[in-house]
Image (cartoon, rainbow over all chains, first blue to last red; front, side, top):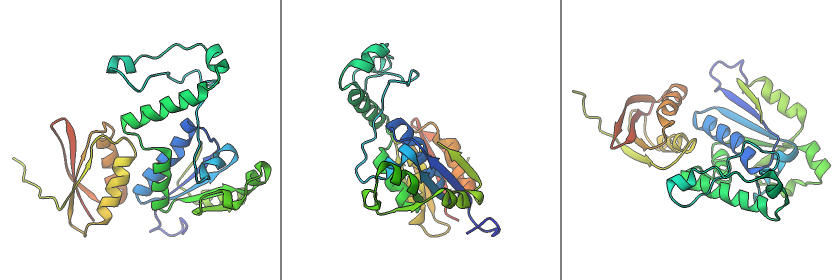
Length: 174
Length: 79
């Protein structure tokens, strides 16, 4: 369907270029929200974003290089949970397993607050007929095969996305 | 005094944050017939503007929104 058809629904075209837990949220939130509003939605997964199409998601988050990331605990009293722990970058960088800890804490905090998991949001996107397009070039570069991704994914290149985005009302690079 | 609105279906989205309230509303409204009314309850502070936007975008009319026991309550009529 194209915009030359006045009855066509609005369209959202997203590029998801990052594969960390924090950056996995925006494309799936916006895509499922737009799908819920009856829009046509397509997400082009490229570079590290491509890993978000794997059946088992392993998106993690790292405090290193994310100086604005709040370090908070998902348990204890509300005042305890609101403490932003001033952990030096030296420690976060050098303590083994710190990224795994930060990932666990973020997931638990999100769950406690009522934020859906990435898995749930992706399934909502699938249920809402969001097009999930994996980047062929990235697959070749990183050595991924079609069967490495969920069956709902389709594969395409830059031209595939650009043609879709050229008819979109909203286009975002994430 | 406002008239009582009789809902055909109730959807409780208490405790859920964006975007799940509108994702669940869109699912629930698909189960209804045209003209039927969905009562939706939410605690997400972003839901009042989001439900209004969802209503405008989908054409399903927001008949009324109110707060009840600290929760947001919306009555939506399927177009």
